[in-house]
Image (cartoon, rainbow, N blue to C red; front, side, top):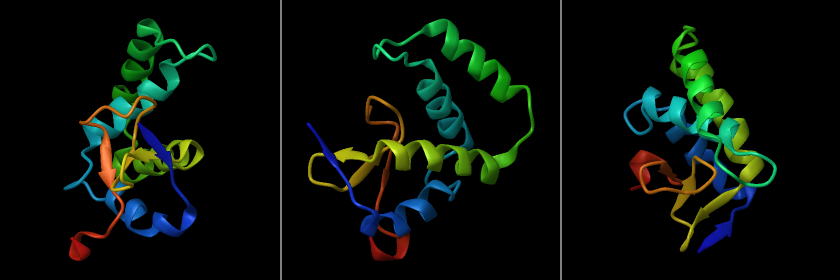
Length: 107
């Protein structure tokens, strides 16, 4: 089950996505590629995923730039786990692609 989240919860999430100790650059790349790989019919296209991963790995954007791109995708989706503790960082909310809302010092 998934919930929608509001903008009042985003400050800690923004900081967490931009913190490489919480969300690694590898996770960010995977999530961006997953968003690109889902078609309008909500089907996962493995070829699109592989193409996006190859493109992302072939350029040097750095953690901050990639985190900004993922942030835009996550805000557009606005889905979190049941209970509202973690935002989904990918289209399907798998356990390895989530980030907490609260700032690290609050947890």
